[in-house]
Image (cartoon, rainbow, N blue to C red; front, top):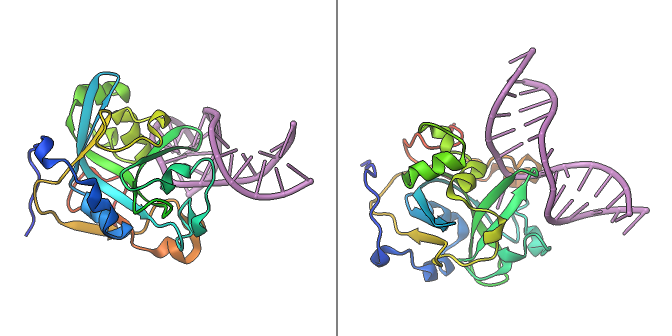
Length: 210
DNA sequence: GTTATGATTTACT
DNA sequence: GTAAATCATAACG
C-alpha cells in the first residue's frame, strides 16, 4: 500500500535518534533515511525537505566508497567519526556533496543525500539556486540539494542534530525503489550494487530508476 | 612541487 | 549525444 507524505511535521519528539545509526548496516540505513525530514539553519535561514533519494557507501569492501579498504585521507577523515557526523566534500570543483556518516568510529560508512522534496523555506532555497519558481531541479541531485539547503564544506565534520542541521523521523510508512549508484563506473563489480534508494513515485528524484 | 581527476550540473549540437 | 565549468585532493616524483 502506497502512502504519500503530504505534510512534514517535526518537533523535538520526532528527532531522529542518532543511536539508531550504529545498529544497522549502511545499505539498510540509506533506506531508512528516505522519507525523513532534513532541516538546516544556515545564516539565519531555515530550510528543509523530505529526503527522497539516497546512496549507501560502505568502507571496507566497497570500491565506490572514498574510504574503500578503510583508507583514511585528509578529505574523508570525517567518515571515520562516529555515526551522526556530517561529511561534506567538494566534487568537480563546484559542488558540495552532503553525506551522513553511520556506524561506529573508524568504520567509515556514509550515506549520500541525492534529492529532497522541498518543504520548508522554499523562498530561501529558490534564491540560493537563483531560481524564480519551483521546479524539480531545485533539489534533485546531490549538488543541488546542498546548494538549496545552504550546506557547504563549513559543515564538514559537524554533528547532526546540532543547531545548523537536524534530521527528523519520517512520519509515515513509505515505499522504496532501488537502483545502481550514479557516477561510480570505476568501481567494477561494486558499481552493480543496488545501493541507491528512492521514494517511490516521487517526482523529486535526480535520475529515473530503470 | 606537479599533475590528473572526480559520489556533478548545465548548456549546447 | 557531447562538453565545459572549476578546484581541492590524492598520487606521484
